[in-house]
Length: 80
Image (tube, rainbow, N blue to C red; front, side):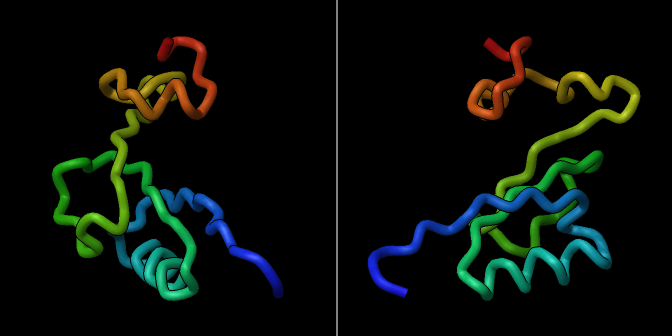
């Protein structure tokens, strides 16, 4: 492979949970970027700054618990 490689952004639901933690760790070790969507935003983040966590509310799936600047970058119309 020639040139520079830009890591893809991977969103792992529940990256701080039992199974999601292994998926996130594997992606990070492969040089990929990882974010997570979680219903427990206050849960300890075992990856530190390497994985950004964003809250999600299953009772209101059309929007996160609070408007966030990242939502507009994902194309969510209500976020702008």
